[in-house]
Image (cartoon, rainbow, N blue to C red):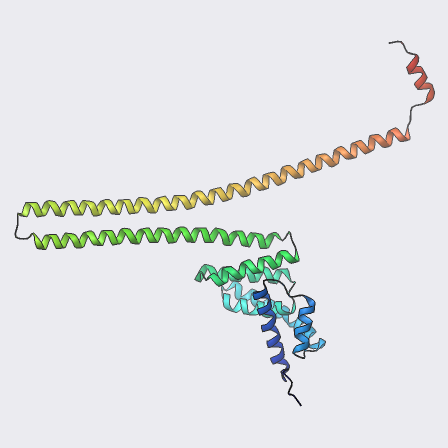
Length: 277
């Protein structure tokens, strides 16, 4: 008789279930369907009672994840949330906290894998609730942090190039001083002064470039803020127009109803017709 592939230990089966559901969520970039979840549970020999018990435990995982997140222990928070979501894949608060934990770890380590997971989990939130504003806000926060991080890298790169240039000038200065030592001291001193001035100019250019980069970052942040304000203003205007439109409809309906309830009498009509112009 062939041996069964199902784990004999229920705890091992639950762990395998969590692992497979997590891999399916990450690789498939979507929330597993109920049929897929039932299929995995059936293949691992997990009973309905065990699934229900694990679902109750998922809330405990969620509570622990909140504590880890508050302490900025992102790895522990992510691990707890993956176990919680394995049995509650449609729970938006859990997904939001998972996205926020990935975001926190990205800010510390700037791993591309964490950025990918944020985008995948945001898509899953929008599958559950297409107008989920919380996940969209977290995605916007990620995009803003990425822009700032790129500006910082560019600034450091420019700073490094200018530093190398300054060091090269210094080495040239020393070399010239050594080779021309036996020549006219006044000429050597003039060359030194020229190189020193050139190094000083390079440092000034370095500071100017760095300040320009900072100004570009501030300008980009201001533009993003202004766009958000414009969107909010448009939303308010749209809401007011809708309210005015609804009020106009109510007035029109009310006037029509009054005309229906109080039609003009025939004598009044005849009297109006007999009146001279």
